[in-house]
Image (cartoon, rainbow, N blue to C red):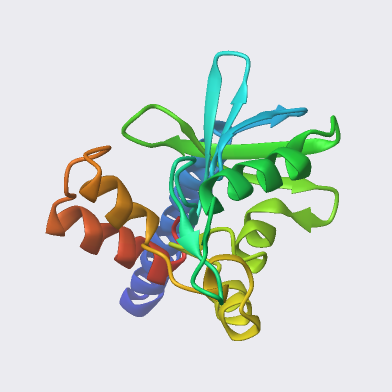
Length: 188
């Protein structure tokens, strides 16, 4: 064998091993995925319950149940309760499927939910009843342009509301940067 042939063979073998390793890693990641069928109970606008299991809709943040927003006329409305009620309507059917493979710091499954072709996560953002924190920027832009839901007037971002009301501690800068980077790379 010539020296060039051996180097090409070794490079090809190395490339094949790297590809095989990537396939195994992808398969292992898929095997940790959890799928749960409805019907679900909406705890708030981005959290579902199925028995003892809690699911957090991935890629969005909805107003808290006690949170209020203002409408076009400056009147208060219960945007948090409306978000919860909308999620309840969207997820109360047995045909709803939620799946995910990661958990948040509260051990809730980070889930994408569908009812057939309907992407429920995207729908909540499109209705203006949640803000995008990941993949739903186009739905948020459309809701904002149309003045849907919270975009009809003024509101405090849910995360800011939680911090101000002591529901959560102010997140660290590193956590925020990591969440942004994962969203930008499409990893969430």
